[in-house]
Length: 443
Image (tube, rainbow, N blue to C red; front, side, top):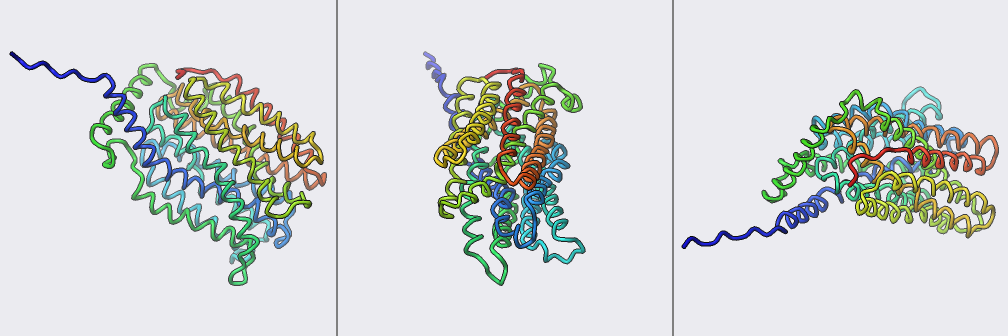
């Protein structure tokens, strides 16, 4: 009598899938969060350094705002090429190049006014910020594309939520660190604001070299995954690719003019206009609260971003559970506008102002993991990489517009109030545009 064939447990594929997702997340996510943490600290530390640098270099709020924003003009140039390089060549090598060059430029910013170039101080500051943006260009959308090499569509919103928390974490960690360096470090006769740039510019260079050895470009190269898990994940991703190809997804050139790409770009431009102005000028807004100590002013600056960590994780988790994307993108933008308007109406009531800014913090970056899951729902692989680059490059021009307008209004009116109303309007309009996004491939 022939022995009975052993029944295959229907749970086995689920168990392999769960193990694979956990192993991939443990391997790549902490490192990507750490790297993005250093990038965002180098991008945002000018908001703290300006508290001394502005006096030392005789720079107005308008100049600081324009310099903070011109970062995104350089950022704009290499976004689309960078995402295609990640998709078609090597994420590991390209991301390493980005980290090393931005770390070098960030460090050089600490020597503004001392560099052997024939430029005035303002022009030097503008060029260093422009070059920092050009050096970092392609990193964020490159990672967004890179995550599609390791996570299935149904897992990406949650994975991106973990990656996106690096933005508020960078402020939670970076602002107190930058403030401590500013107030306590004056080695070799250099002011604290110079050491903010120098000390925070070195880690990305070191991490760039680590990236060359640590990250893996594709699943089939992952020797750190057991064979059955590697085969399972490769099969899942290949099946997705075949399904997208069969559905006739949009090609690379059409991605530029696809209505959804344009709508996402406008929404992202408006919300970044509001968010980046707040990021760069919140230290100045809280520094004006002279009734509090420096420690408490720093804490008030950080609190909204602690709330933001929870907002990103909660919204990303809930979107993964429900499969709904449009309102998980639009609602946080609209609620940010409501909260910021309440902060303005709070006037001189300090407790209310702080509470409202915490409400802004909870919502104003919560859209991120869901928003960046939308392009892959209507485009093929290379077209998705193109669209992510287009959306991020155009949208991040809001990072130029927001701080520039806010700095100009602060200089011309002597008050933060007018600028905050402009940012409120941008957040409301972003939410209205995002509410028109058409979902495809829910769940």
